[in-house]
Image (cartoon, rainbow, N blue to C red; front, side, top):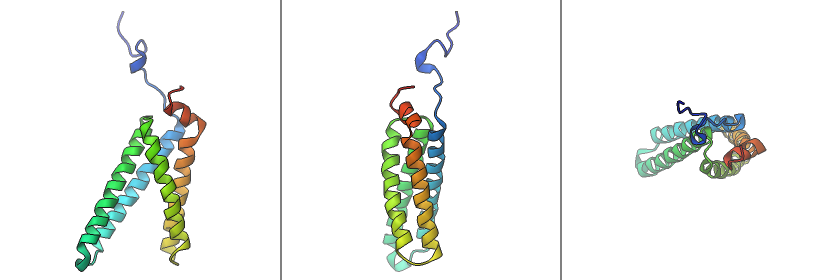
Amino acid sequence: MPNTTEDQPSLRKVSIPRTLRIAAVVLAIQALGFAAFAVVELTSTNPTRLAVGVGASVFLLVYAALLALSGWGLWRGRRLARGFAVTAQVIHLFVGYSFVSGQPGLGSLLTGVVMMVTAIVVGVCVLLPSSTKRLIGQD
């Protein structure tokens, strides 16, 4: 009898809930946004404050990579990706609120609203029962 993936539980394809897929895609979009912001920060840095601009850009790129890694983990249904994803979204809610309530201007308002809406979408998708059951192994 041939050895198929259906015979071996460890190799069986496990379905990932749509909610985790949505969260992963939104995390990827957030990662692209932070990476773009890092490039803008680097290109618009005053030459007299180059170290600050480079430092901020490196920090933003590392953060973008962590968001992307977390999204990839959620896409694959990995439990460890959830903790960073939820923590990052809580931070995004606070930072987004500071953009909305801080400086006047359409750019700040839109940035804050986008951060808060995407944070809510990821947070809700990751914490829904279907996602939780998949991530803690109760398929």
